[in-house]
Image 1 (cartoon, rainbow, N blue to C red):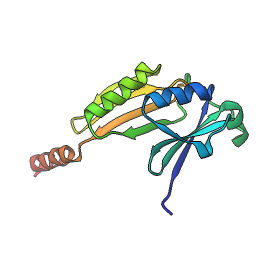
Image 2: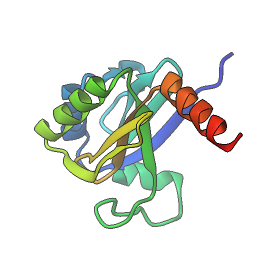
Image 3: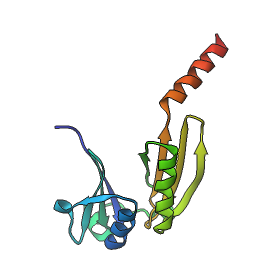
Image 4: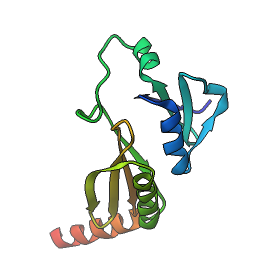
Length: 144
């Protein structure tokens, strides 16, 4: 069996979170959805479990971080192009998200980020590996 990753995120209002992420194009697994949680499908083997804070608290003795005030994690999702990065983040902002950081353009890698309704930071990036290889080859030629 292929390994899977399940990122567990506390949310204040599960219905609002589902509505937000649905606007971004995400789907949810109904087998793992009830009034306390839902399983958001990010990729073939990557999922975010959105857990109502009270339910999330049953999994840890630590205090739940207020993601509007502290950064407990940075979630990064890749896209297939710069345009797809922009479309993803623009959808998030239109759905009620906020800009987390200014866009980053490193030539071969481009990213934008937003905070979801609960303050979790989502980095959305595109990496052009061919451009990275060209840049590294040019750099190597300069030092040779």
